Image (tube, rainbow, N blue to C red):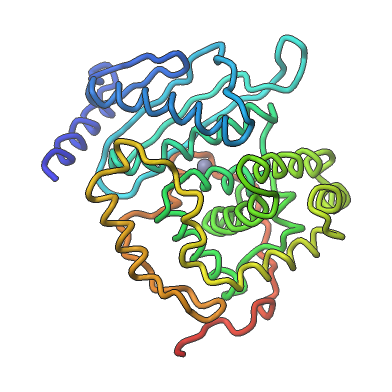
Length: 339
Ligand SMILES: [Zn+2]
């Protein structure tokens, strides 16, 4: 704790006096700004490793070197962790859609940043690179949450079920076409993750699932109309429509959430092998009842941080939010108080 406190203070001082920030570290694709030289190096190396790994998972190959290093600002603080990656889009030399600039900021507990927030943010860069333009929010966040650690994904899964049971989720026909963040960001993150995870699983093992999701997004984004998304659901996943896809997703949610998210857990990294991380996993598994009723959220594992505190510094939309319009009865009674 004392170390964290020291680092937090260092970060605070650095925030107040940018010229005095302690350390910078360059890798081929990132230039990291962090409270200490050691942290800058660790985050730089981890960012490069995630950059390789996430591109391999999604695209089957590494991304070409970025023409300019992506600034990565790391603030180590106590409390909840979060991050934001900002992009500008334009055209490349061949006038194809491309990212023209990007920068990344992450803030929070160092281990949480290394294990979960950083891979989440790096995944945004892979998706942005692939499409060269803004990715539909539900999939941009949902796909990035796939890169978070098991505990946080579990938490999103649970929250999604709670949102559904409370009648606060979006119809997928609405969610798919959203290009801005809604007022209630939690809904977008949790539901976006749940749908993304469902589609990735449905699409096949390994990279097939992610590759199909990219196809689906590409087809739906062409026009971004109800028709384009229906056509995408048909051609990529064999559903008659987005409504039919929605039905399939809800049906899949009738499987309790216990270990479903464990399959794809991020590979162990030095930072992920700490006793604390191991303890968190153990706690999570042991607290999740294996045979809960269909949509009852399992016992919530005690987690100190908000998993979706990501929007730190991310521009929240000034536009009016799309009202959640999920009809409450969709998933039956709102709660299963007791078995
Ligand atoms: Zn994100």
